[in-house]
Image 1 (cartoon, rainbow, N blue to C red):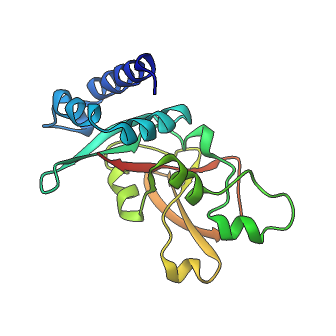
Image 2: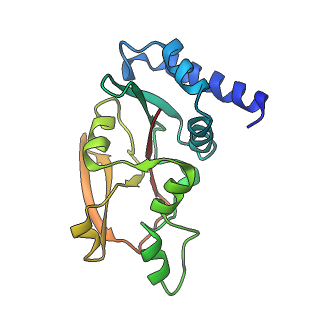
Length: 181
């Protein structure tokens, strides 16, 4: 990443951090910045999150490991990560009208992880997300082995978890990711 690109990304992240202090009470930007400046892979992943519309922000700090958690905080599922089936197996199994890719592989390529159901609910405790869209979440193996995959959204003031065939994809369904730095 070029120096100007890095500086622009860090300025964007800092501005978002300062505008949304309720997401990370007790965390100082200087500490986050110090951690980011020494981690080129994290900056690359955050740039990919930003470029696809995720609006990543700090949502936590783990004292035991000393890591900060970034998560996609865009109001709707990131626009640059929609119309994807769940994983590579689902993409391969789809014979017609294949999507451009899959959520699990796109996340891995970006260097982030899909949210679990618990992590999705934690995010929803910080604001109201996915009021018009939905997001794939990490699906337990027992569900996935039967051909299904899970996704979440927020409707009627509640967070819902649904199931669908892993091969399905919709223009209003994407995925949210997390990154520990």
